[in-house]
Each structure stands twice: as C-alpha cells, then as structure tokens.
Length: 347
Figure (cartoon, rainbow, N blue to C red):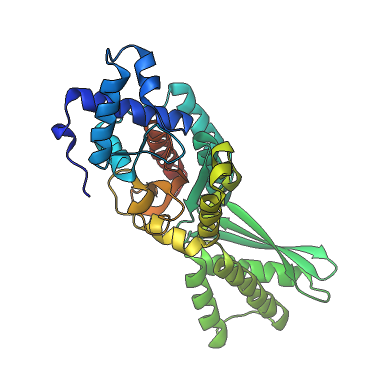
C-alpha cells in the first residue's frame, strides 16, 4: 500500500509520527503510547495517542512488532519522514575542519579513498563505502631502483603527486644503466597518459623495432608493464570499512538479518552496481530497506553521493550502509561534505 502524502495527515498525526520515528532512530526500539504521553508536551492521553498510532499503522507508516506494544516506522514511513519532515543537522565548523584534515593528510589518492571510507564509518557508526574512481589517473614519472638480490622497486608517480610502489622480480644482475634506460624510456612515453595508453604506445614502438633499448632494458620495460597491469586488473572497485559496526547490540536479536547484510557486502560487484546508480544524482541519494532489492532482505539503508574531480566530472561514489534506523539527519550532510572534500583531492 502506498503511503499517503504528508499533507493528508493532521497536525496531531504528523507530530506523533515524527516523535515515533525520531525515538526509533535514537534508540532502535519501538516507541509506545506511554512513552509519548509521559513526555507531557503532546497534552494527549495514552488512549488518544494509541488511536493515532493505530491510524498511522493502518496507513502503512508504522508497524507493531509482535514482541512489543510500541510502534516503529515502516520503510514507507521512513521514506515520508526523510523526504518531508527530516530536520537536517548541518556539520559544525569543527566537524568540517576535521573531515578535511583527515582526507588531506592521507597522502596519495588511494590512501585518501581508504581514509574516506574509514571516515564515513566513524561518522555514521555503520559501514563506509567508496568506489575507486573509474577514470584512470594520468601518469607523470616512472623509476626503477635496484634493491639487489634480483629485485627492483618500481615507483609510479601520478600527475596529482600520488606515489605508488611495487617490488619487481627481475632476476640476475641488472646494470644501473639498464635500469636508467628503462626508467627514462617509460617516463618519456607515459607522461600525461594513462597506464593503458602508455603501455600500448611502448609495445607498439618496441614491436616495430623503433626503440633504442638493449635486451636487458627491453625486458625490464616488459616486466614493469606486467606488474602494473596485473595490479590494475586486480584492484577492487569498492573499498568497505567498518563492517564490524553493523554488529551492534540491536543486531544480536536479528542475527540472520545482519548475516544477510554481511553476505551482501562480500559481493562487492553488486554493491558497486547499487552505488553506480547514484552516479548521476544531483544530490545525496537515500535507499531505504525494501526500496532496494539488494538489501531488501537485510533491512538496511544506503546513503550515497557522487564525488567529482577538480573539473567537476563525476569519478566515483561514496556512501554509508547500515540499519534503517540510521541517523539520516546527521549522516546525509556528512556524506555530502565528505564527497565534496574528497573531490578537492582528485585531479
């Protein structure tokens, strides 16, 4: 049954409904007429409140769990609350400063992505998720450093200043000249290109016999490309942090729901597909419980926002997943702020 528009509710019904939702979000427990009457500000008897609660339940906005006489919002009720009644709690200046400081101090972009996921988890008390940018980074420099014992350190520098290292098994003794020649060759051809573009150009030149590389340097180039290409293929599309937060006290009474949610999180491709649906959103999107087929069984909500690079292009999506009693008023603006802060670091 579709929920009625909020305008169709009486002022009394709207106030009681709001208090039930906010009480449930705060405690995770159903809210009863006695609790609402004890507050004193409604100036209604428990019997009058029970009558309104029954009407709201009949409209599909509230439900009464069999273990309690209290009421809790349904998914439809939460949707109406989020869309029409929620009072957003904007982050304080101190919170804004903390978010930006944690992201800016994270180092290379990949570390910033992991930090963003951990940050969202800390802010929400649930699990944080960040999709790795789909747009490949443009590269600036490549160096090979001899580590001895048949190994070299491959250092890749991006145009955004990010640095990543990989240990390369080269076997045998390699002269410093070969390392320098391979480094210079790769750097000259990858500057301003993605790894895939640089690899195509280098292989074409080597295949056509146009390079001046000797056999040892040519072998180093091939090995360098191989280790970075394999790494890119294996790189996860989704970073999840704080899944343990989902095992709170309220979860112990519904362990099957939590197990279902954790199983869903293990299937990162499906979760990434859900986040992808928020890529073109103008603002933060909220998926509540059964509205989303993927998490319908686990009764979970997802709050997601796209993040953009410095040129305003959407490069990924980040968000939070947790129980439907997430503090939407606080988490929504935090997700939005984290997305904007992260975007300032993406070249």
